[in-house]
Length: 392
Image (cartoon, rainbow, N blue to C red; front, side, top):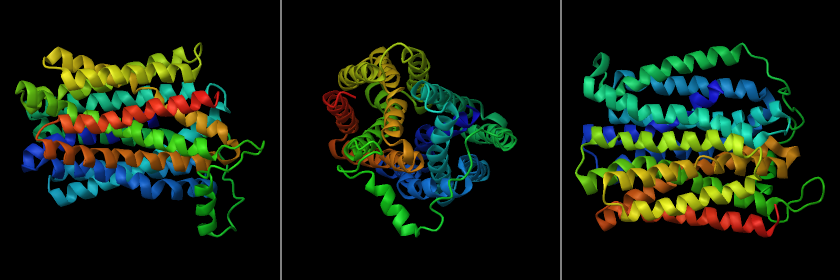
């Protein structure tokens, strides 16, 4: 669970990009390249990580990801140079891609398939704590010039927590974590092809059931889920600044509202799914997000916008774990590979901000960015309807 907290460090890119934009006088499109750069690496490193787990085990892979995350957090402590920030954000993205690919199946193996969705949801709740603390720490640092770092004070604070997580995991021996080893003599190219074969509609599970099409739907759902997550955290402060004329320091707190609500959604979901079927709860979550979209489009007061962002966060707190658990259960003999494919979908955090930045620049306002978020929410609804027809 402490590693899930470290996983949440990646969400600081939303508020950090807003402060970097102000400090370096960047355009929306240029500022949004920073979170996009972080999540681009998920597209590149997720599948190789799934193969690496087969060789060195899941725990060692998570440790590798923590080391890269620590390296990313060190750089902004010393410099705000845009080039070095690109390096920092890249390392943060690579480390988080490795961590999310390896940590989720490690937890699933510890649970041995039991209560997997609710446990992963609780992990997302822990992750959200790190997410909603980042804007608070950054705003406090910017207001007080804490320790001379300003808003960047969140980096040394998170660096300390990351070191603690690394040391504690290093001294832990989780069960069911020996390297698979069965593919060590198989050419890497063939291993890659075997991973992507899981996305083919005609791919069958050991029991003979066609699961490839469902894995592909899960992959695209992760793309949309993360795109919504990053997109709202980046855009919400801009909506307040655009419609109400608020300063960045005051508007930054709305990102905390989003992540607090997301944490509340994950925490409550970990208990609700012990009594309610996860697919039913997914519909409830998506319905909340649709209502939130209306508020984002039409909200004209601070409380209307805050309420819409909170509802979006609460609704988006559970889809990831539901989608992930369902996909792992669909292909239980290929959990590492399925995890790699799904985490590759986190590249949605790169795609959505770029599209949102271009859309907002094109229409001259944040309505363009909200339209892009709407596409992701509507796909989530379609994903639920498709699964319902399959009687999942």
